[in-house]
Image 1 (spheres, rainbow, N blue to C red):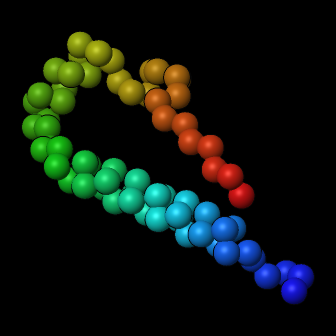
Image 2 (cartoon, rainbow, N blue to C red):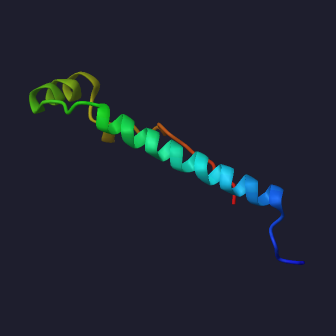
Length: 66
C-alpha cells in the first residue's frame, strides 16, 4: 500500500527519536548536576576569560536528518 512506512523505516524513525530524547535528557541531567557559580567567582571568570558575548565562534552544532 502506498504511503505506509515500512517496518525498517519505522524502526529507524523510532530509534532516531529515542536517541534524540536520550541526548536531551542526558544534557538536561548534566546541566542540573553543575553547581551554580557565586557572583563573585563569576566576575573573576569574566575578568580573566572575557564575557561570552565577545567570542563569536560556534560551541555546538547539530545536523538533523528529516
